[in-house]
Image 1 (tube, rainbow, N blue to C red):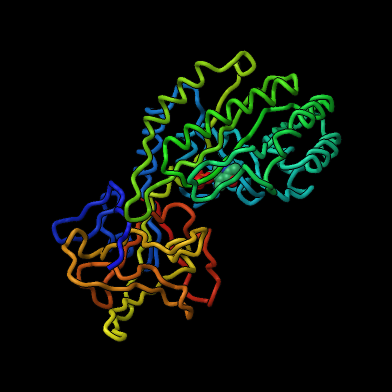
Image 2: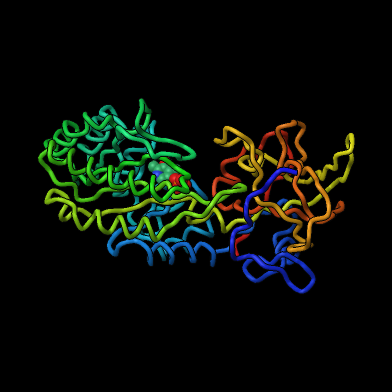
Length: 406
Ligand SMILES: *Cc1c(COP(=O)(O)O)cnc(C)c1O
């Protein structure tokens, strides 16, 4: 037997052991959506995270949603009512949120001239990734009649410790090295741009409050140092995000209250340079990850040399991360359950695969579950972030996944 992660809070069963998502049975949702494989996103669970953030973080710290975690169109207007801004990482994502009326910032390497022009025209804040991008943005905006909103993304000299994905503390395609940021800021101001401030993102998927606290404090200190050298206080500092969720056996949820308390102290003690700066935190995974469930139906139950396999109609082409092939060094099991026997005691050890013709298509390896047959439905939890749009859906030409919001 191999361990699996904890099922996130907020899911239950009806009297017959059928998984409830947003108060509805899984089979009702499948019927509504037209079949499996299906992603279900429970907006009340997204709302729960937003409320927790507001309660724990110092007042005045803005919350931005990083659209790449889950760009499902029906989810975005709902989130727009509850957050303070969107962070997008492509022109496509910009198109998904441009009509929703919130402030938008645009980060990401390789922005083309056409994308810069569209973003500047739409009044979006560009998080500049290099001096070259800055010059292109200035040249493009010289044609318009209002100064472009430009912020500088900084490649910090530190990384978020213990993060699933580190950004910073090294060479990088992201941002301008911190020691070159002051000169770039002076250049932007001299060129007449509306300099919006700094964006510093040190890593992703951390469950360690201590490491996040340290990274936030280091980010605020670095922002003050850069601003002093540039001789200009930043209107805004985006502290990045990096808040993780528990996926695997042994993972503990993040202590949000500890982060909020320390951040509040650090902000109270910030020096004069950052006195009137507005701070933002940008989150993707932590807001939506636990709100999603991937439902896939068992097509075949088979034995191989004493091991039981449940073969499903889904797979890594929809849920690459659960197969261990999206950013993990070692494959570990996501939380999974039999949706029609939710909460029942386990009585066998099984391996769950998808339907793709590759041994990589493993959804759960040697986990203990209640007995299940062909026709039953597997639920994979923690599927709300970096799920469908982070997976190679066209690989092998299998069925496309459906999505539904409850
Ligand atoms: C991906 C990304 C995020 C979101 O990261 P999560 O770990 O999902 O919270 C935030 N900011 C930037 C710049 C990103 O690229």
